[in-house]
Length: 141
Image (tube, rainbow, N blue to C red; front, side, top):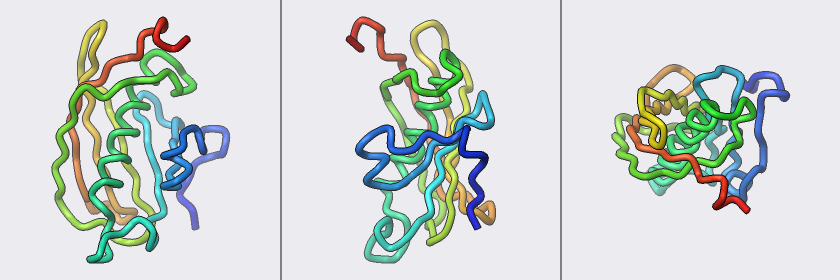
């Protein structure tokens, strides 16, 4: 059974990366943002655990979306990752995982955002800390 919230709060297939990996962005819990992925064989490494690159992708997207929610309730205002540090804590197993991004500080131009990736049983797989910046409006046209 899927743990996803109502479809009205989900962002699907917004980017090529999101479509390729298959995660869903969840904006049902502002100011936090979530990324959900049902981990299967295409997401694991040779040890049958969640690949570290996909772990980083989920943490990064949950963080960027949390930043976006500070300026746009749709969660789609683009943010750039300036820096992000990831701590790998436990292996990610097949099944549902959820990354949660939370803004912890910042100012006018930069936001400091923490994220946690956890298995559906609550086991923390990885955490991250990052600095994010909104894409300037003039760069979007």
